[in-house]
Image (cartoon, rainbow, N blue to C red; front, side, top):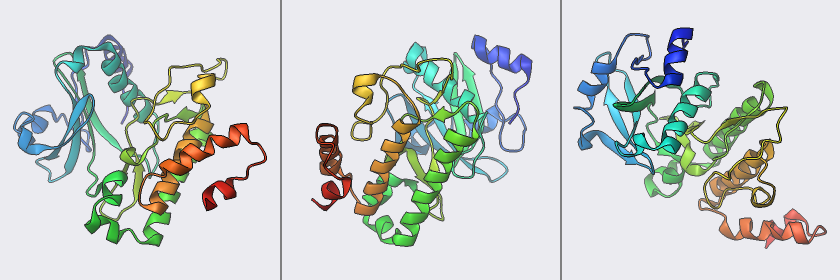
Amino acid sequence: MKISPQESKALKNGDLFSIWNYDGRIAFQDILDATDNFDIRYCIGTGGYGSVYKAQLPSGKVVAIKKLHGLESEEPAFDECFRNEVKILTKIRHKNIVKLHGFCLHRRSMFLIYEYMEKGSLFYALRTDSLAVELGWRKRVKIIQGVAYALAYMHHDCNPPIVHRDISSNNILLNSSLDGFISDFGAARILDPGSSNRIVVAGTRGYIAPELAYTMVVNEKCDVFSFGVVVLETIMGRHPEEIVSAITLLRDCPSLMLKDVLDS
C-alpha cells in the first residue's frame, strides 16, 4: 500500500479520510455496511483502547477492523498509537507480520483494517481445549519459527531496525493453518542510530525485559526477551511465571546457569 506525498501530509495533519481495501478501491462505505455501522453483533474482541470487528466486504473478502473507541480517539496517547501503527505497517512486509489492508485516520472515525485471523490469538488458542489439541509439537514449533523470522526481519533487514516492544501471546495471531503472525504495532519504535533510544517502558506485564526498568533504553534485546517468554509459554501451554521470576536471579547470581533455572 503506497501513500502519496499529499496523503502523507494529510495523515500528519489528522485530515486523512481515505480508506483502501485489499484491491485498492475506495471502501469506506463498504466497511460501514459490512459492520452495520460497527454494531456490537460484529464485535469479536475489545482491548484497552479499541474494539475489533469481523467484516465481510462485497468482494467476499473477510477482514478484521480495529476501531478506536470514541472517547479514546480524543486522547493524544491513543491517537499516537494508531498513527504509529499505520506508520510502521506501511513500511514493512513479511509473511509472518499481519497485513494492514487499509486505514481511516480522521477525527470523526479512526480504524485500521487487517487480514482476518481465523484462530484468534496464541494466548486464546493455548487456553482453549479444542484449539490446544490442534497445536501439536510441529504446529507449535512452526508458530515459534514464524515469529522468530518476523523479528529477525524487523531487527536485521529493516534499516533502521524496528522494535515491537510488546511481544506477547496476545499479540501473536493465528490463521486457519495455525501459522503465527505478529500484530499490534501501536507501541513499536524505529530505532534512531544517533539517539540513546531512552523511552517510557511499554509492553505487557510478564513479558517485559527486566533491565528496561533500570535502563529505560529500548533495543532489539527487549523483543528477544519477550519472544523467549512466548516460546516457553507455547511449549508449556501456560505463562511461565515462575521461570520469568527466577530468571531475574541471574542478575544477582552470575554463576547460576539458565538450564538450572529451567530444570527447577
